[in-house]
Amino acid sequence: MSEIRPDVDGVQPLDPAQLNTYFVLMESVSLLQYQLEQQLRTEGGISYVQFELLARLGDAAGPLTMTQLADGVAYSRSGLTYQAGLLEKAGLITRGPDPDDDRVTAVTLTDDGRDLIHRVLPGHIQLTRRLLFDPLTDDDLHNLGEIMTRVRDHMRTQPPRSAAPRKRRRATAAHDGTMADG
Image (tube, rainbow, N blue to C red; front, side):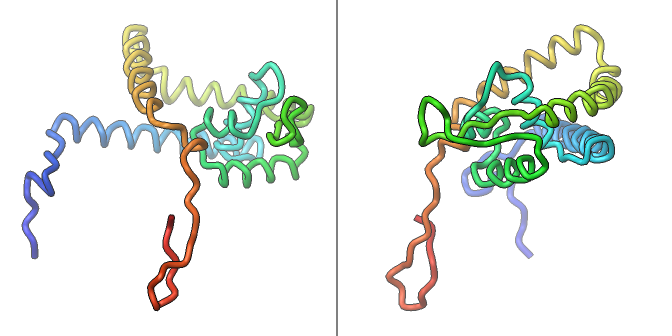
């Protein structure tokens, strides 16, 4: 059995405060998302990701491109395409060529999509308020907002997932015929 070293492969481990903060944050986000997911499925028959897409479209001044949606919800292109297909099949969105650039797909919220958002939003707000905001003071809310904005902005300095190069599958020269990412 190998011994766990405090400095693994030249990477300094997280200190106890960092580790605790990491676990508390991840657990809090998981608990919140689980409860919100249950509320959205019960009241609207949609997932949290689908709600995010519909809500972004509802807040937009007009159609959004698939890339704008993917960047806004930090979701992969393929995952977004799949979710958009489900929403389109349900009649909640429409997809089509962008009038300004036919190489781009524009996404529009339908009246049924808008009605669904209006139906699930009150419960979503109440649950979010009860789980996330009720235990916070005004100062806590302000500080948390500033901290998480700084963290998000730092993370967003990396290219958005939708702008990341696509992995291409190609055959290797190896005699075993395996595939490698390129």
